[in-house]
Amino acid sequence: MYIQDTDDLLAYRERLRVSMHALYEAYKEGLQGKDIVYAIFEGEIIEHYPRRNRVLIIGPIRQHNPPLHVVCDYTDYEEIVAVTVYIPSRAKWMGDLVRKQ
Image (cartoon, rainbow, N blue to C red; front, side, top):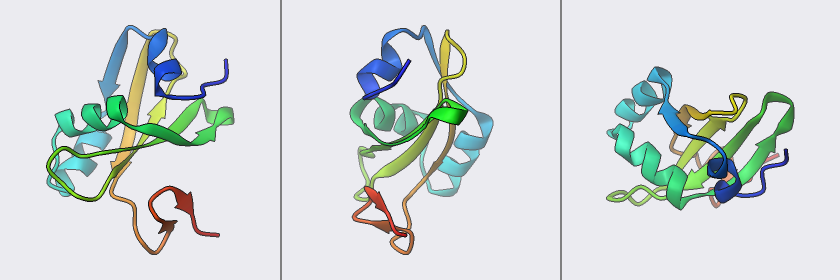
């Protein structure tokens, strides 16, 4: 199954789980689990990793200016797992959406 957007990602799954690693990374940025969930539901997919059944989502953070990148794994047919999160670095990303070469 090819995932085109976050609606496809969320459509057939019963659960969304945020990994402990993602929570730890969010905490280092001053964020909470609800910020990760909000970014997933309000965000858009900007990269696909089909070999690993993962996508990279860019989403807004409710009370912060920079967006949040969330890597989600959809290997399990019943749940999506937010594997890690980070604020995109200007050194690695052009305009938060395109990875620099």
